[in-house]
Image (cartoon, one colour):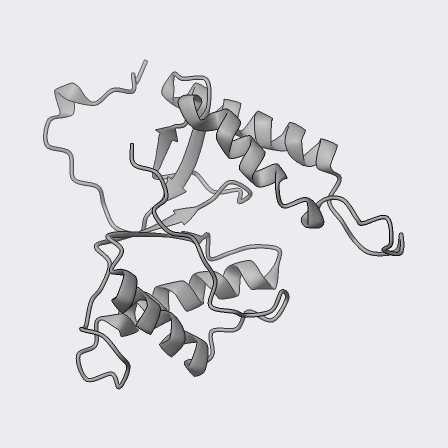
Length: 177
């Protein structure tokens, strides 16, 4: 399994992600520059507006990047695959990736976003933050749950909108019974 080759932002402030024309064009230009084969977006239904807006923005940015007549820099390009991360959605995944070997690194990366989970001592106590202990426990349970579904210790669920092609049904790894 290959790791993430690039992760970044287009400079949109927290709680202000909108699929506006300006942001779509900025993202489309970035996609043309980076030319990713696969893009992972948040699932299109979510509690946080930034997450579902980011999903729409990402999908439309990928589409616009492939339009030859679009007046932005770079050669027209569309990613081959768009996947949706569904870790916190009540949706059955299309497939689950075995992340057992990467689980500890993934856990540390998520917990590194401390500002999302623990308030700074200088911040007022009225700000809303997720309890890091609860988040870590839920993250562990979900990864174990999805891992169990495919017969490994930890799994990461994904969804795709299109059907998957299977070349050899006999070589499919997950048991039915």
